[in-house]
Image 1 (cartoon, rainbow, N blue to C red):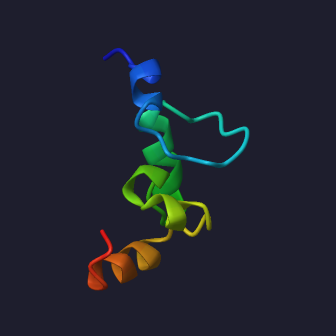
Image 2 (image 1 turned 180 degrees about the vertical axis):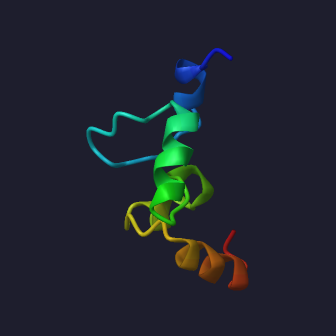
Length: 67
């Protein structure tokens, strides 16, 4: 499968400077799942900027109806 990195970047809201995985979704998802996290793209922009990408934070947002 060919990665569509340039196309993926248009939907990537990751604000972490220097992230080598930006636009490479398969690497990003794999990296975050190993750390019990989800990638930036599943979080609203204001929450993504906190860098709390934990499963628990996502569950909190779902329970509050924020995602």
